[in-house]
Amino acid sequence: MIPITVVDVRDAEDLVVEVLRSGSIAQGPMVKRFEDAFAAVSGTKHAIAVNNGTTALVAALQVLDLQPGDEVVTSPFTFVATLNAILEAGATVRFADIRRDDFAMDPENTAAAVTDRTKVLMPVHLYGQTADMGKLAPLAAERGLQVIEDSAQAVGASFEGKPAGSFGIGCFSLYATKNITTAEGGVITTDDDELADKLRVLRNQGMRARYQYEVAGHNYRMTDLHAAVGIPQLAKLDQLTAARQANAKRLSEGLAGTPGLEVPQVLPGREHVWHQYTVLVGPHAMLSRDELAAALTERGIGNGIYYPKIVFDYDCYAVHELIPGARVEDFPVARSVAEQALSLPVHPHLSESDLETIIETVREVLGA
Image (cartoon, rainbow, N blue to C red; front, side):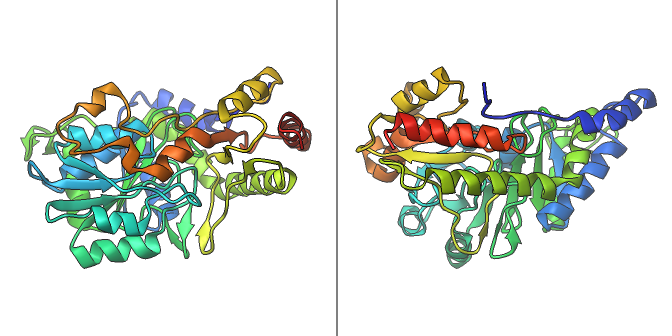
C-alpha cells in the first residue's frame, strides 16, 4: 500500500530524551525554542504555541472580544474545526463561496457576505496554498475587519513572498498528518504585541505569574515533549517542502490530459507547500470520485476525500441558530468541489516508483 501520508519524527529522539531526562515535561524552554523557530518561518514577531489547531482558532477569536451577534465570514469548504471554533467563541457564522482554482474563499463572494455585524474574515488556506490574500487582506482593511487565517495546512506557504499567518492572526495545526507535526499541537502567529500578550495569558489559565489571574483563562498550553518533536522538522522545512513540490510537479505532469481529471494549480505569486495533492474528478470522467477512490484503494494507492460535504451540511449544524440562513444550494462551487475532490499521496517519502505507480494506476482506471 502506498499511504496517503507518512509520519516520520525519528529526528526528534535526542530532544525528546533531553526533555524526559530534565524531569520537566510541561511547557518550558523547549516550547520557547519551538516558538522562536516557528516565528522565523511565519515571518512574524510572535508565535504562541498551544495544544492543538482548533485551540489556536478559538483563542484567536477570544482575544478579539467578540460580542453576541458579531459575525465571522469563512469558507463552507473546510475541516469542521473552522466552524466549531467560531461557534465555541460565541460568534455568528457567515459563509462565502469558494473558487475552484485554489479551493479558498472567493474575494467577490466574500465582499458580498460582509454585513454591518461582520468583525472578522477567516480565510482558509486549503491543501497547502494560500487564499487570495492580495484581495482579501485589502477588503478587510477597507471594511475595518480583523483577519484570522486558518493556516492549519499551510505552514511555509506564501502569497507574493508574504508567509501564511502574517496577514493578521495566523492559526496553524501541528496534527500528526500535517507538514510539520508535534502529534497534537497548534500555533498562533501575530505581529501585534498586545494580542500576543493576551494570548499567552489566556493559554495559561489567565495567569501572568503564578496565582496572578488577570482574565478567566484556559489551559491551552503545549508541552515541552510536543515541542521537542517539532523542532527538528522546522529546521528542515525547506527540504521537506521541496520534496513535496517535486512530487506534486511529477504527478501533475503524469496526470495531465487524463480524461475527466482536473489536476491542482499553483497560482501566480503563491508558494504551494502541498499538504495535499487534490484532483477534481469531473462529471465526464469514466468513474465518479467515490468509485475512483475505491478503485485506487483496491489497487493499493492510498487516497483521501477532504471533504465529502460542505462543512455545515450535517444535522448538528443545519439546525444551529448561529448559522443564519445557510443553505447548501447557495454555495454551488463549494458543493461541486466537495463532490469531486480526491487527494492523492504527495508526502516526502514517496519514491520515483511510487509516483509512477500512482500515475499509471489513476490513468488506467480512468481509461487514459
